[in-house]
Length: 468
Image 1 (cartoon, rainbow, N blue to C red):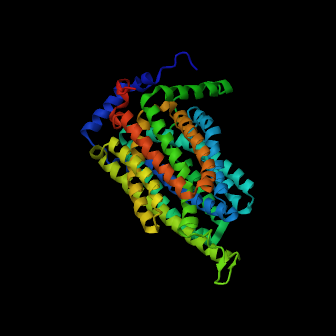
Image 2 (tube, rainbow, N blue to C red):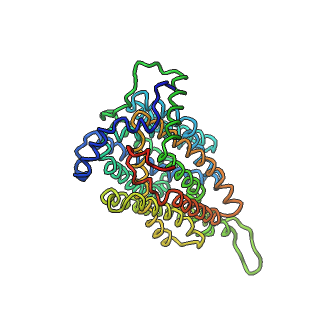
Image 3 (spheres, rainbow, N blue to C red):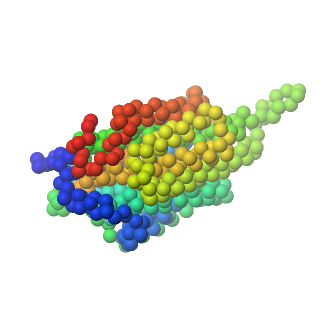
C-alpha cells in the first residue's frame, strides 16, 4: 500500500468543496427524471441493460427448471446456484482491482462476450458436472461485469442524479424480471434447453451497445506497472477502506444478515410449489380399495411439474412488478418517505414474506404477499444502493463493490449449499419459516443498534460525526 494513503474519512472529504456545491444546488432544485433522460451515455447504458437483463431473467428461471427436471433434486439445484456464486468470491475482488486500474468499458464488453459464449453450450450439456462448470464460468463473467458497471454509473450521472438514475436502472431490471418469468416458463416448456440461446443472444447485443458508450474509468496513474504486488496492494487498500468507513460497515452487516436469510429460503419456492402445494412427491402411486399398488406415475407428476413451473414464473413476475412500483415511488418521493423508513419496511417485508410460508399459503396468497414485499424491497434496495455509492469515492469504488460482493457471496455459497440439505432434513416449510424468523430477529437488533438507521440521514462529508 502507498505510504501517502489517506484514511477513508480523508478520502471522502477530499472534495468537500465540490460535493458541498452539488448538495447546495440539490437543496434548491429537486433533480428530475427529465435531466436523467438527457444524459446520452446513461441512456445508452440503460438500453444495453435492457437486453442483458432480459437474458438474465429468462436464464434465472430456465437454469433452475433445467437442473430440477434432470435431477429432481433440491440439493443439485442449489449446488448449481452455488457454483454460479463461487466466482464472486474468487474472481470478484480481483475484477474490482482491474476496474479501478484499466478500462471499465473493456472489462464489461469482454464479460458480456464470455457470458454469451458460455450460455451457447448449455443446450448440449445434460451432465450435472458440466452444467456446474458452465455456471462457474457465467458467475466469473458476471462478477467481472458488475464491478466496473456499478463503479461507473455515479461518474456517468453525477451524485445529484444518482438516485433517479438507479431508480430507472431498477425499473428496467424489474420490468424485465416481470416479463422474463412470464415468458421463461412457457418458453422452457416448449423449447426446453434451447431456451438458453435467447439468453446468449441478449448478452451479445449488450456487448455491441457497450461499444458506443463513453464509460469513465477511475483516475489512476496509468504509467504504474500492474504487477501481483500492485494488485495485492490495491485489494488491501479497498479492504482497509471498507473496514474504516463506519456507514459502509453497517451496510455490509445488513447485507450479510439479509443474504443469509434469503439464500436459505429463496431457492425453495419452486420445491414448495411442487412438493407442498401440489403434493407431487406423495402422489406417485395408485390406491385401490383392495390394495395399494406402488406404480410410478411419471405422466401425472410431469403435469404437476409444469403447473409448478408456471406458478413459479408468475410469482416471480408479481414480486418484480411490486419492486418496480416501490423503486419508482421511492425515486420520486425519497425526501418524503426517508431512507430509514424505506430500509426498515423493506427488511421487515422480506422477513414477513418467508415467515408466511409457516401457514402454507396458496397461490393467490403468495402473489399478494409477494407483491407487497416487492414494493417495500424496491424502496429498500434503492436506499441502500444510494447510501453505498455516496460513501465510496470513485478511486476505490470498483474494489469496494467487488470486495463487498465477495464477502456477501461467501455466505450465499454456504447457505445455498446448506439450503437443500436442510430442506431435505427438516422440510421445506420449516427451512423457509426459519429464515423469516432469523431476518426478523436480526432486523430488530440492527434497528436498536443504529437507533432506527440514524446513519441513513448522514451526508458523506459528515462521516466523522457518525457514532460507532
